[in-house]
Image 1: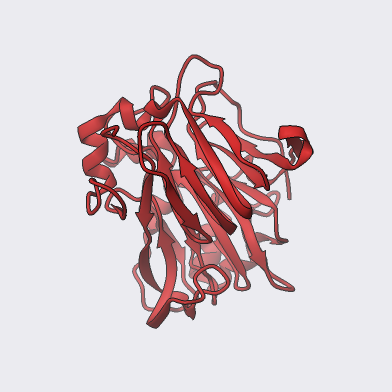
Image 2: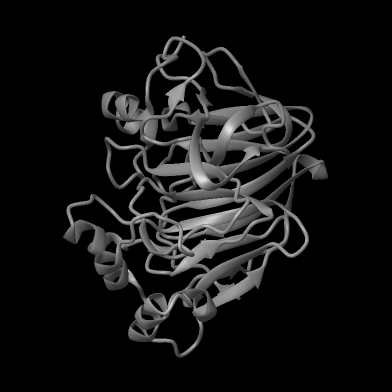
Length: 333
């Protein structure tokens, strides 16, 4: 048996004041007495649930196995590159901003936080706040915070299931209630809270306002049509290809062969997240692992090839670090 194998991750449920005790439709069987806002899947401290490495955290395994787990496309050969999580907003999140790499490193953090949001579910009227309205300056936005009207200066955008939203570092943003989001981001939890509707939580105005960019490339991603795989029964929809991550939606009805390289000469750890259905993930020399809706499986870069066998059908998000250099994606608001 290979020392590394497909790793089924245990979700880490994170309480937030804007969350909910009901995580349906992703985790309908989980019941909570406190509001859960996020389910972390591949954070540094997220733990493996299967096989000989069960109980080990991703940070520990990344340090131990390096490129064999993470791949040669990862910017840091000893740190897991991408954090994936579900978000369950029942109320508005705080208005916030994340620093870019330069701003993060200026305050001693290893890197910034650019992210993308896949809308797994959305009810009628679900909205996000994304970026400052055209012409709004950082100074005007800072004044709006003092006047308790920061929301008025954001672009409020309706969101619908299946959309992908790019959130570049430096973008002022928030999530409204009514949607379930799968977030793929740089492995960072550096968040500057700028405005919180009067909730008694700390604001980070000095660093946050310094990180704000007035013009950003954030928005709904314009993407090509889905592509047929395996004679038409399987489909691949490229959702986003950006500087830090690439995310595809795989809709599978038949077994599907996949690779950990992208033709660039580099390879990457592959992260599979089931948003509908269930499947088995196979890698030569290791025991297959079963995943269902809400589960994440981390496939080590050293696998080279691996196989997904849907149990009837499955919809998977597949995230990785691109070996090619991509610009920021084309977007619209």
